[in-house]
Image (cartoon, rainbow, N blue to C red; front, side):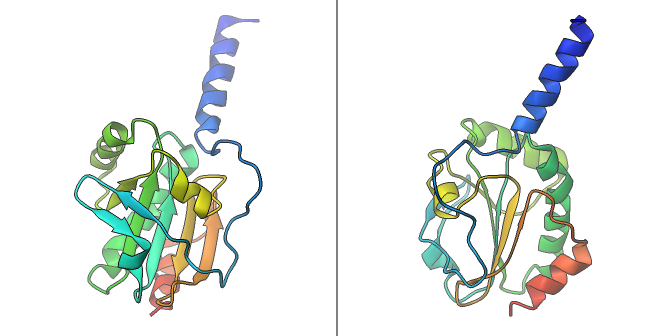
Length: 169
């Protein structure tokens, strides 16, 4: 096989692999109306837990810096974050990459993201939330129930996402 074709195939496989979470047995994404699982994760500036989100609408996003789908969808989430800033809606962006403490700050700086981000190196939060593919986005109402979820390709505009978020309050 030609070295160029082999290299292209290998790079394509590696790029696509960034969007799939590790294989796991059992469990599904949280359905609408499901309660937010208990969790606690830390980031560069603070920690956040499910208790911290109680009583407030929340946007929880699972991502990887190497995922092309995440690279396409995260700017819309960032824009929604900026548009609802100060409204009491909490945003929690979570990565479980092994070197997340290095690659996520670099990714945030390179892309101009300002949302808070956290690390889940052991993947406990990913498992509790039934995340098998990234990006996965959950909208939780102020009672901590899933109001809406999207996986891989969100299929919404920023205006639609902002409308869904504003509908949580």
